[in-house]
Length: 347
Image (tube, rainbow, N blue to C red; front, side, top):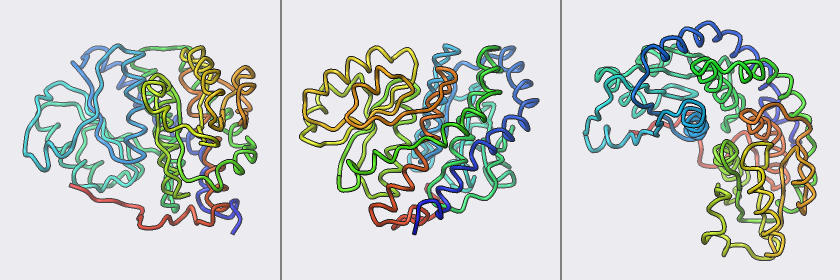
């Protein structure tokens, strides 16, 4: 099997077109939502999601807190479904995110939130799913069928729509203008050649994916993909936390995939890279910035940059085809990871 023949690789390549359609089809609804939320500001936001969707929700948390100054937290579904506790959610904004919209715990949390007076939004790929029927407002991802178990285009569409929502809510004109150019930038990112990253990872068993801010949110998703498609034990790590203890993991050739977009954490990440170079690990640096790539043992160039909020989306877009290639190189099928199914139902 060649990576380009896998569904994961092909679906990752479809993501720019999916994002273009999702932004276009949801634009009017997003502007209406933005106006409503400015007039009826919720006391806080709560996200409800699992897996890749929960990693997208973490990106949404960074958006809501950094651009709107509103507290955003991730729901713990078992509080509702196992412990039977109801939360005070009146007037809160509850954002449920799911590719399939079928997990009972997400449905139950969203249903209860709506009963308790929250405004409930569902970002789903399946418009007629139980979750979509439960929420007050439905925002389709427009990703179409996603046959690979590992989500790619649905995850990227979710990031784009969360950004579109917050841009409309904050009336952020520069971000709106950048969003209009996001699909074109994603096409360029999808063409990134990260072949050099295969050699240091193909025989490795453990590693870290490091970032800060929006890139830290995306690091969670990249670490998950390395685990599920390549059986590579990767963990996401904040660049602010790495030197507080986890750096003890670093030994000769220990791989660290460091995400360094052009964003406010850039100076701190450059200092971190300089610090790590003397500790024996192998630095794979994904970045559009030459000063970051120069500090890498293996540079993974991002061929374009767009906006500090959006460049981490471009890093994920560049990573997905590479993840499919790595999976095949390690002898796995990225479309059908062992022990996994496309839809997971939890309570």
